[in-house]
Image 1 (cartoon, rainbow, N blue to C red):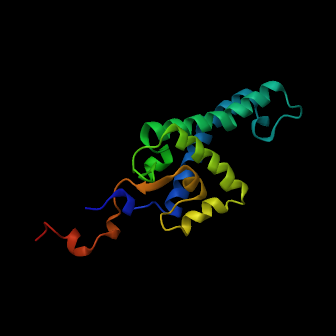
Image 2 (image 1 turned 90 degrees about the vertical axis):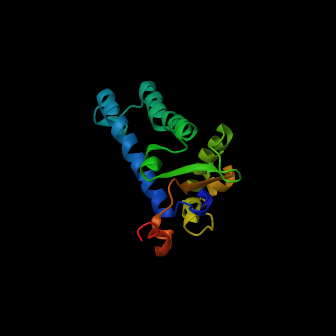
Image 3 (image 1 turned 90 degrees about the horizontal axis):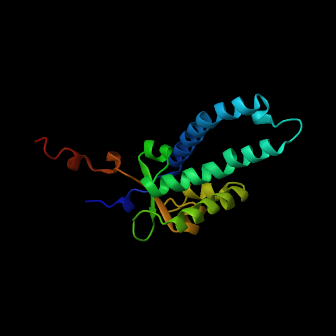
Length: 161
């Protein structure tokens, strides 16, 4: 029997999960932004009003951070990760994240992005497929179900004889 740690989620699967999350978030928040601010919802109004700044901070930063943390705590995955059948776990125990680890991981996202996104690219080359944010938080991203491509053909054919 294989353990989840033997099936780390790779760069492309994780990038696809991120893209799905971004599309979902945009689909949920764009109509609200347009309803409140019209076309200027994405370009910014000619005159920055306090209402626009507060809403932009809320929808652009605070809400996504809280949603990501909540999803990690509730399911171990964001909707994109869930669709890609991957989840975030504590690297040492392979148990769900703590709130502290989630906060550190999100902070690590900022650090990874600030370093010309090299912290994310690191995933492609790391033995455990950890990005800088994973290393900072002590997390790994694993496939929920093992990929059958990793199994020998003889094992896959058991029970068919």
